[in-house]
Every structure is written in structure tokens, then in C-alpha cells.
Length: 379
Image (cartoon, helix red, strand yellow):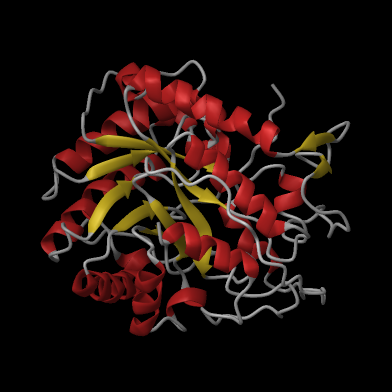
């Protein structure tokens, strides 16, 4: 099976200094595909950093609620996103590296609580996170980085409950896109301890969202894995999550270094990575191989999988058709999904047209892709 999947939500900051070229906007309406009553989640992502919360107002949540979004996922990061070791936590205060973001999270969850909206909190770039495999997995995974992440899981669950947000935060995700992933340490060291820390917290009943043991949490980690019971942990109150960006040279064009802007649309012949030897034809039929992996795992594990991120650069030709096809595939299989993203760096934001410049604003002029998403959210 051709593996043409990758998830790089962190990539947005790599283009901070890159100007978006001017494209011609395609205003052709997109006819929706399959709609199924099965998915319980039709949501969206918010990249939670200063690009988001400095321009985010309470009225945005009225707009998103009117669209029908039933779950918003926040990636939670340290305040100083680029400097891995600044403002370290202390034995008495784990929140020092996160003080500003935590205040903003409290404000935003308050807005959501007032509206009865639901959230998923995903722990993303945390103190000590330098993506260094030797540091992360040294001594069999016993190191300060992993221990801090484990402690943060319990602290976040306690904070959610203690601040009155237990009815608002539906899911807590211990690790967004684990990387680099030593699968055995992730399964056998991190997950059992992180789950134990959450269950020992003041919010033991929160549902835990677990990404598979694979770099970036890609769904290929589901192959040959039956879930957390393989790690000696049996926990009934969990779901699983994964990300889909496929093929990546199409979805990430102009986003990552070495991923040029393309003059071809969807469907078409694409490589997953630029280094792949040859392009293959990518369309709905190829995409169904992805849901086959997910459904197979759901049957084995007896648990739900949500695609908590999928998205495409807004200037990709045919991006709305790509979104339509992938949503239709997930709907066919009854898989819940969350689009990436509706706030943060606007290269992913479907509120903006292809020709719009980069901006920190939350809402743009709209697009056919946004109209399509609003149709599905409204279901």
C-alpha cells in the first residue's frame, strides 16, 4: 500500500517570513460528497499561540457555533515557542513556561463554557521540546523532558477541573504528533505513566485522546497495534486520534522548505515527499486506503478514532475538491473529523481566499472551501 500520509501541524511557523504569492481565486461552488449520520465529531482546529489569541474575540465563537462546529481542538504550547529551555518550570510551579498561554486558555474556555461548546486540549510544544531524539528518548525514555510531559498531563487535568471546565473540555490529548517517536518507549513508558497521571488528577473522568506510536502520530502506527492494552494499560475512557495530510507535496506546497507551489490541481499525480522516486495518482480511491487502516484498528481495539487534523494550503489548486473528497471518505466510514485550521497562521484557514496575503486575522473574505465545510458542519 502506498504510504502517502504525513502530518506537520508545526510547519506553520516555518513560513513566517515567506510571502504568499498572488493566485487567481476560483469561486466555483463545490458540490458536497457523502454525508453520513455516523460521525459524532465535525470540528476544527485552532493553533493556540499569539497569532491566534491576540486577534481572537468572543464574537468569533458565536460565528463558529452558528456554522455548526461541535468540537474545537486547541494545541497548547509553551509561551516562548522557539526557545526550548527558557523560563523553566520549578518544583513548585509547573506553569512558569506557560503562564501567558494559560491565561488566554482560561479566557477562551470561559467563552466556550458560556455557549455550551466543547473543546479538546492537545499538549503540543512544551518546555524542553527541541525535537532531539537523543534527548527525548535517552535512558529508555527516563529523562526530564518526558517526565515533565507526564507531570503536565496530570497538572492540566487538575487545572481543567479546578477552574470549572470539566463540562467544556471533552478530551485531553497527552501528546500532539509525537516526534521523534521511539514506538516502544512511547507505548510502554510514556502512555502508561501519562494516563496514570491524568487518572490520579482532580479530573479523572476526562476522555483521553491517544495518537498512535508513529512519527507525527500517523495512522500507520495503528498497523499491528491493538491500543493501550499493549502497554499494560487498560482504560475504557479513551479515544484515538490521527492526522491526514496526503499527498504531502500537494497539501504542504509553499508551506515547507522544498515543497514548491504547484501548477496542477486535484486529483493528479503527486509524490508524498519530494524525495520519493516517483509520483502516483492520488484521488478518492487512493484516499480510501487511509480509512481502511483506521477502520481496521477500530474493529481490533473496539475504540473510536477521530481524524483530529486534516487540511491543505489554501492556495493549492483544487484544494476545496481535496477537502470534499477526504471528508466524503471519512463520512462513508463513519469517522469523526476536525479541519486544520480556522484560526492561527492563515495559510491553512479556509476563511481566506487563495490570493489573500498572510494575516493574523481570524476571518477573511470566505471561499468555496469554507462554504463546503459549513455545509458539513451544519449536518
